Length: 244
Image (cartoon, rainbow, N blue to C red; front, side, top):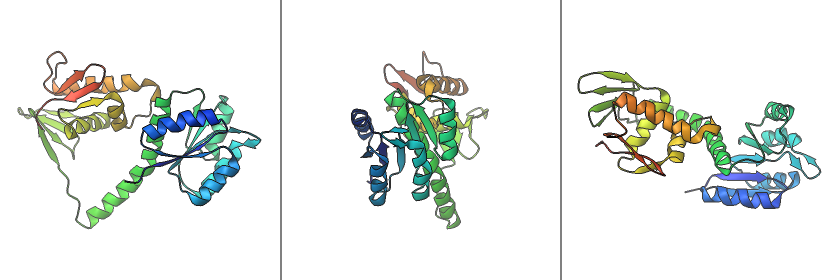
């Protein structure tokens, strides 16, 4: 399977080493460049899926590189900069950057932003492919999924119990539940679940998951102390324990 390519552009060699090591652990192929010239040479032979761009390159203005990159490839650009001024952020986004993160930052946040920006590119492509397959009559979907005392209606984003009581699900609740249903009796980390929610609030990583789990438990009438559906796994995350 081909790895997702991340182009890392920063003149700080030590920081590049730290970032590339972390991203490679996440499963990405990292392409490095220390200058704008090196980036241009890289783009002549490689097509990265996303670019992490520092603005304060030695002797160069990183902002000026953004429109040049956009003319060549359509990959998302995340500005990774020590410049914290709002003006720099606004100018970078107006020039074509897709996201902006300031130094210093946590690697977990960087990873979340990379995943989020890649999703924005992949999702429209997936939608187009699915629409094409639907026209050809080749799409097969599972509209109803039974688990415990509930039935999930994937078309209506609803769950219905044996007493025919219906609970509507939000998009996040639906994404979370379907993630659980795909992996019953497996301990799922908060990071894994967080990614499934497609959340944009990078500063509330753990809380975003806990809040959504609490809401989903309430709709399932599931007690955390005596769980029938979602069990808390200390130090890891959660496990879906009902039969699917």
